[in-house]
Length: 179
Image 1 (cartoon, rainbow, N blue to C red):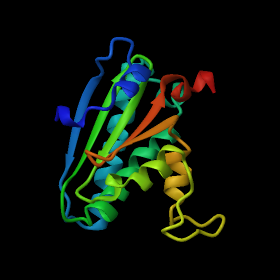
Image 2: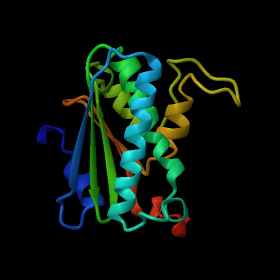
Image 3: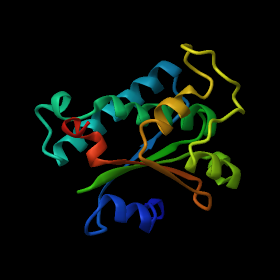
């Protein structure tokens, strides 16, 4: 799975020694929407706890970590499953943890993140219009991208050759004491 590794730039931002702890999740699809949401919630919870343990926030995770920012994982996984892979092909998720931050990598079987235009939009956090505009206060339609993926990422990279979305969260922005 090393072909899933983030760029040198990301590694420099999240790791002093350029060697992150790596975990990979392979998510089979073709499950009911309810089962898929449960799977994504479980992964989000597990990753939250893994990050908290790494930074020694473990027991007091709610007191020490901005756990709401982990919604980014849940939303990106569901988008990968239901839009990219169409709930047919498996989805891959990579977690990369370093002393200065974490990187989440999402890859599905679709071509969405192989587009230079999508790369430009996501890396510059430009609102998407292709899904329609949601009414204020109503979830859905690209709100997850604007609110969770853009909002909870310190920066984003898209690798068009691999078709991977990388969302970086720096330790200081996850540390509730720095907020």
